[in-house]
Image (cartoon, rainbow, N blue to C red):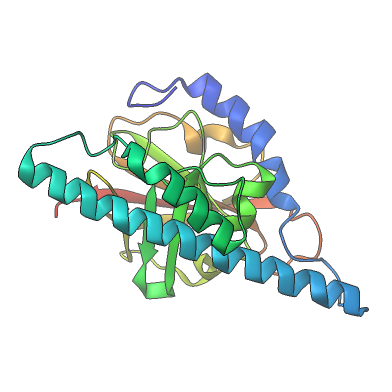
Length: 231
């Protein structure tokens, strides 16, 4: 369920059940003791870079198509072009990520901490290894209410340790760009599920595990709250 009326009970259940995997972040917990571990790390970093590059390419192309469609009053911005399907598959194969080609929901940018990443739907392990994930049951980026995104503390959301009040966050979708200003950060227990509750105001919630440098499953959650601003 998405939109302003997202049920807070559903959100509570999602936070308890689906954010638990965030404790098992992407990178190995201990030191690298073998060539196999180093090769695994290199492969992981390569796959993440390729995935982000491919999805950024798709998103920029879709954004350009949406702008062209708006000018020529053709098809809705959210409607994929059928003629592109085969090209997408070929491009995915070229990037070595065939089989994981869902369309990105948009892009998150936080210039103050050097973050720019594509947003995908879901918070399963595979999604969070490659992108920032939209938490199901909360409004989609750009919609009204409490939009919630999750990321690993040792990859895309590592920079959140340096975020400050009044920093700006930009979400870009095919329907426009939405700016948010950081109000607060806090550390909560995993059971403190109210962070995903529905809100009357337009809010952005970012979730990562905490502490950022904890070895193993991090015991707490780091929360960033921001409100939408004009422009």
